[in-house]
Length: 284
Image 1 (cartoon, rainbow, N blue to C red):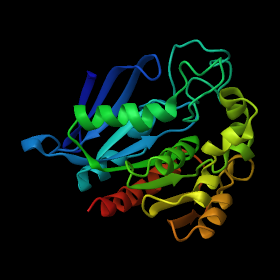
Image 2: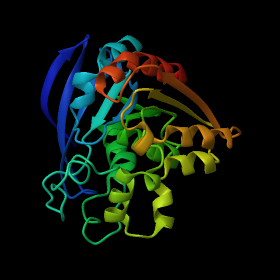
Image 3: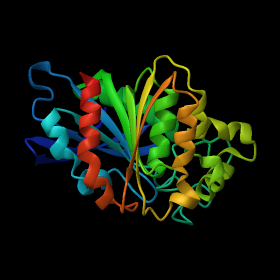
Image 4: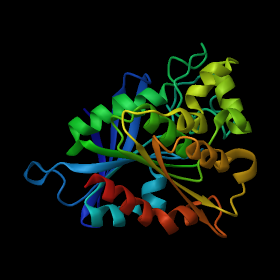
């Protein structure tokens, strides 16, 4: 069960903030949900998009900055926005820098002694939170997809590809495309998984796109701004394009390059309506 902390009317639906105790993470967690007007009315269960946010974010950033509830309301879709990490668990150095730890879990299941007790965000999103929202909220578990931005785009790709039976499609904005091949990812994976690069491959989005084989063809939409300050050193979205071209049998891949746009939420807000509509068509 989850406790309702607040509720605000929004585009004929409601933005609700919830808190629950996570047995996977060993702490209390919060998530924000937009529920459209008819959700729960007459036992109506609606489709949902999980949104995974990037570094330094929490459960509120996407809902408050992107403008997505307007489009979700139009299409009768719920939005589920988890926090980006455990909070207050006091693991080694997890509050020392902005790009690792609290607000920066990288959606990985840690295996190192320092972090494995609490940093299990992959399982939290794919299993615990998925089960919670599809039982506690009026969400249709057969019509769920995942979206993300930046490191959250990496999370959406890795979670969605590993759990394709749960997530119908994936769309991402400016994703970190290969964690083992960028400074953010190397730092995080070293801390969370140790030096064994065979373990790192499980969280390499480009590798997963290249090797994905089912249970069905996965549809992926990748969106990228040409003026993104992180594109060259951290994101490497071209690696996703190359990986998808090598696995066209199993992956349906669309790439939208946006001239003049950077990495921030003005960029996300400019195109989030297209993404929500793209997901809506795949829920039919």
